[in-house]
Length: 208
Image (cartoon, rainbow, N blue to C red; front, side, top):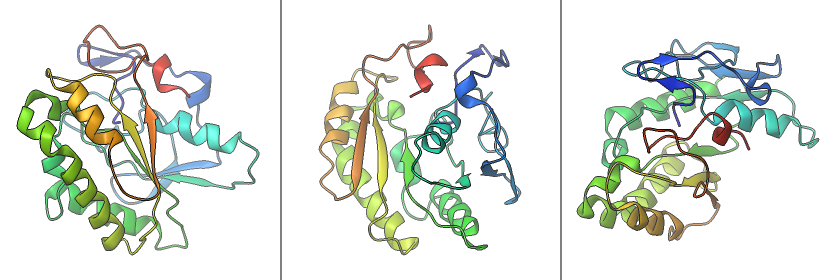
């Protein structure tokens, strides 16, 4: 989710596809909680311990804008931290608290949160125990986020894994597809092109 498209080693090649180009109609909430015109890498000041490149956020926002649905300004609130397990996003953890804090800051000036876009789980494929507990932890995470943001019907757009760091990819995929909550929408990444690291999506695969 933080964006690894175009990353070779610890460098980003700087290529931005047309579908990911900035527009004055799409904004991002930066690390200082200020709105600015959104640009790639979307998570450059959020996932600071790793090199960020192209992720799904900008192409997703541009696709929404191009849908002809009458949507005005789109605000993106990047929160992803690459290489984290779901247990690191439980209620009360640093990542969870920052997500809720940033989301809350985004609607202080009249914004409306329309959905949460979630792409995570590769690190949970390294352990059978983590994979087996993924469904329950994810359902709790969704319920907690909805409760803390006071948005009981908040749509969750969840990407079902295409790859993982360990041998339990299918277990995590099964858990993701088995989430038994309303307004959870699955987008299956299986079959999309993976980089030579056998883990992250290519730049082209990040584009809808």
